[in-house]
Amino acid sequence: MPTLPMLHTYKAGPIEQVVLPGETVGIWVNKVYEFYKIQYVEGIMRSDPVTIDLGALGALGLSALTQVTLLQMPDKEFAQFRMETLDDVEIGVYQGRADQRHKLFTRAATLNRFLPLFDPDAHITEMYEFEDNFIFLQAINQTAYAQTQARVVFWGFRYVLEILDQYSWRKQVLPDVWTRIPATAHL
Amino acid sequence: MGTDYLKAARGIRKVSPVVTVAAAATPENLYLVSVGATVGRTVIVRKIMCYSVVGNCVVQIGIGLAPLVPIFPFLYVINLFDTEWMEDEIPEVELNQNITVQSDILGVQVQIECEEIGT
Image (cartoon, rainbow over all chains, first blue to last red; front, side, top):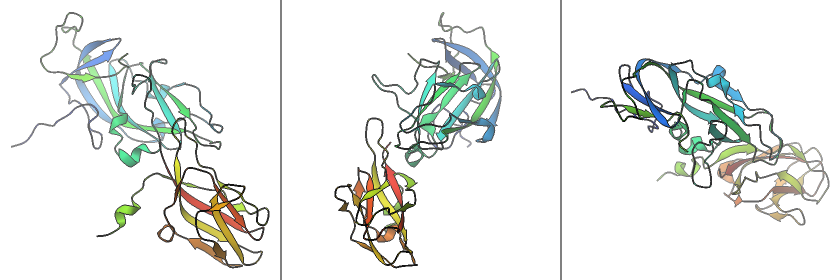
């Protein structure tokens, strides 16, 4: 008997899509869930066009907080990304320029070159970008020498959406089954 | 039971520059361990390469500049031979300081590959 796929965000192992076409998602944006039906899904390969170089860094230097415009999605689309840094730099992740992701109470976890040793599929790095709710990155050089580049590469899936305006998070009129997509920071 | 599990990566690989020892019997920096923002990293020497055109010499690898404290026995480098010690031959000495080198003759070239452990 065939089994249904178990799809969910931050799934361990190689990246998989988090929903299938025809399913319903609630995208967390502007402190509410907005509801959509998935129309179409396609892969975003780990490749040069979806790699960013945050630039040269002096010893112990840090880059500007950089808006990752290359990850922008069109209206009524969102993307699921995983990421890896290719250089020995620490990467702070923000969504909304001032809103750190991967937060604790006093600290925020960062992407780093050691991560693939313990999480080869980078599942813990998973991020979602809805339309122009940009991801921002900042590179920090922890080494005692200058580095000429600070690269971060992305891969994942693109999802095309259809608005489901019969549902409302504010009115608590919710679909029976839906997948939560954390596309902005939960402050 | 095999020992391959001992070779599993614990950190990331880095290399020192090729250092040409500048003065006889005088320690100098060979590899600067990354300092880390809040929690320091450690470093393990995995490979050592030396080459001399200035005569047979004795190379010491260690920590500290005044004086150098060896972390391995002295290494004897034969003139005009490329001399290498690979990771199976090197004790796994883990340090949280810069790695330094000295030689009894100036002019010998030394390079090391390290594994840095941390975050």
